[in-house]
Image (cartoon, rainbow, N blue to C red; front, side):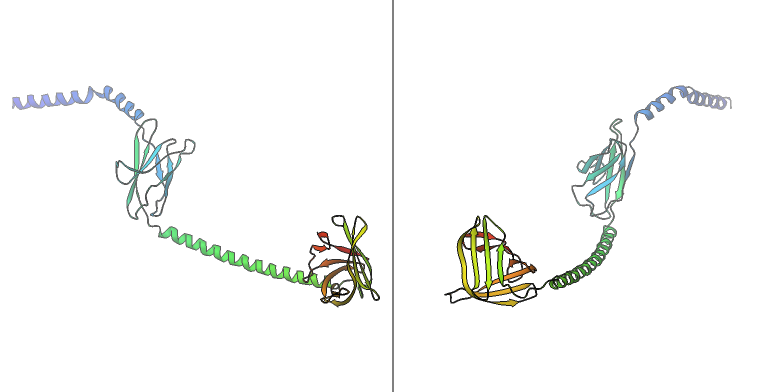
Length: 282
């Protein structure tokens, strides 16, 4: 009985010594360890099977690495978190398989400690559906805009037709081209046309005010008024077997322009004179 009591007393003594003596020595050691080994913060956005990048945020300046498995030697991609915002974007070298896992590591550049998260790769169906919906909305909007554009075009066409109609209904009238008409000067050249019931149609070319050539003489002519202001003149020069045509667009009772068969102002040659756009005034 005495031996048992002595043994118990020894055990109690040993237990007491082990519990109290190291207390002051352990505390600073633990505190120093925590201050030296600080792991980085890391968050990762959802990852889809058709993703080409992985994005998230981490401790500013952290080195980010994406691996196929824990501690894999080859990285699927790497990046560095922004030193200002902590945001990062890792470009992936391979396409990820749905329902597989990827390991995203962040390494604190100061403490050299690492932290990782295991991310499950989601199927891309949800994202695709959203894209399809967006495309449908865009198509509907486009159709609506097209319809509106078509309506605008139709209105413009109608307005143009109305304008043309108004233009055709000129406030002046021309019954005959009879008289002498002088042209503008182009490249030092000018013309004169004379329509007469006695001498027919005559056309002369001038340079620097001096007559250089008679282009048409004593030609028989006839007038075909396509509209009140758009005329077709058919003439046959004296001694010629074939007839020629001349189109005029009257802009007033005493002014016309040389045009083509579609009533468009065009550049026309006159003898040796270079092609020019001609306007004649009475």
